[in-house]
Length: 279
Ligand code: ZN
Image (cartoon, rainbow, N blue to C red; front, side, top):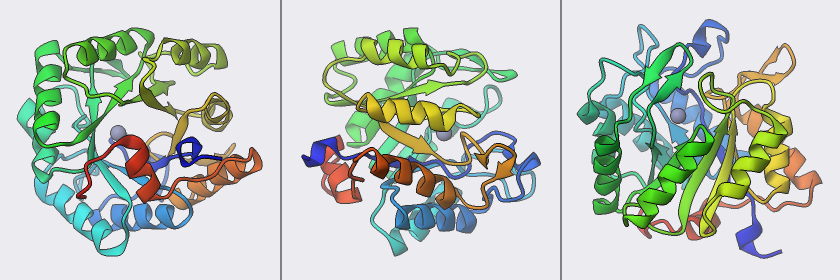
């Protein structure tokens, strides 16, 4: 099996939603978030998708100092790829500049949201001019964007960015299913999205909620990578909370190995994703 067919596992330890209300295990502080990422690395995650939170309110709080502390703590202990969010974690009240502050740290990768949409009970604002500004900032800093496609039309928006030269190929595209306001998490929907992807892309499946493990398994069978973590799903099995993000990574790694998949190391993932050579 060639390295290119190895599975890249991303861990998203905390996200920006109110999961802390349902799980006491959600990491909140930079130290906790970094610890969860490193433990996930030890069981197979090669990428950490990072949000940061306010220590008191636990709400998303995109501050450069918090991102910096998480990055430093992970860097001290392992070589996993660090992907910082530019989602900001809220529709209103967070400026474009604040959302993009994570890019000042020049992470190897960052998320790129391409469409305005209803997201849960709020609105996720991504006007076209902001999306293009964000994409340009990532090109200038040699940050690999991971385009988050929450619905079918978002894939077309990614194609337009590629055509404009604002996304370099091979692009990295995540198909995100199960957000309220985005495409529902069903096997047919994942199959349909998969068919619409640009040819030169390395894609990833992200599923919010209880359909996560079945659909991630389908995504692997279709040749995609996978993301797990408490950002997307806090349960290990029905009614059983994951105590650590590493438990979720172990579970998907176990399924992958049963299917005969090799798990990519961070070094292999860097090469597959075409990241710049200096972390
Ligand atoms: Zn995220």
